[in-house]
Picture: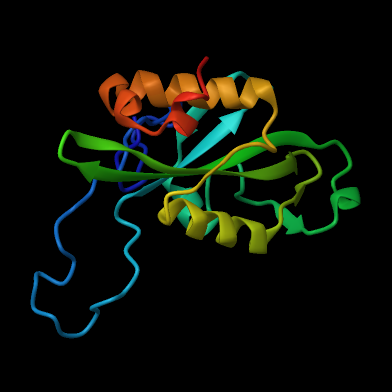
Length: 175
């Protein structure tokens, strides 16, 4: 199982570790780094509608998830001969008086042809959706119904209480 740092001692198992809010990154000193954006509470989830799977892959934080490695991405869909759909979903966790909850959830499309080592993704979209997730937006409308259901089941199975504390928009992923 992958840990929150993305290492995977057993390559055949997929991880479920979420990054939970950590302490104050500046330790309250108010000096260098104050106001810097922290990604400590964001976790990338890969949704694979073909295999019917959803899992955490921390390598996606730097575009180095298992499915992205050795793939040349272009912003032109026609460069991917036999595309297989994937969704990279940025999940941000926040905390209120009741406990942690899923705060921001935004999905980004990827298409990959592993055999041809080609793929499609829009890097600006990935960056913008990451930012929207950090700001608490829920943007999954462009995901297909199967992928949304897989994501909702994954989030609920990971921590049902956290799922139940989330906004109605997030809970709508699972009818």
